[in-house]
Length: 121
Image (cartoon, rainbow, N blue to C red; front, top):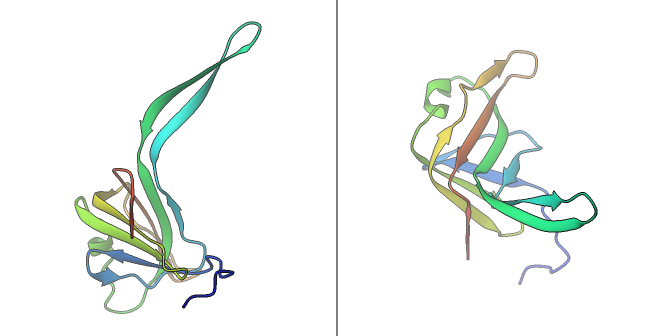
């Protein structure tokens, strides 16, 4: 049984079946509904809602055999799995921009967006 005091510290990210060798600091915005507060002249009136895309940002360690072109996709399932056992999946995700290669730290910065992430239970 997992320790209930364990907190998220690491994540595995997959693009389709390809496990990315990511650096620390990957982020997931699960998307869904964004709310904007409506303020009137004399009071807070409430809020409005708009749909919001999910977003995964990560830096992938580059080594021989890793194709930067394969990281740039228009239709993939992106999976974000925390070391707590929590898993989110984004179906039909796309890369927002081309991967940005950084020779200083040997990585490619990748950003993926899609429909709201679904938590896999």
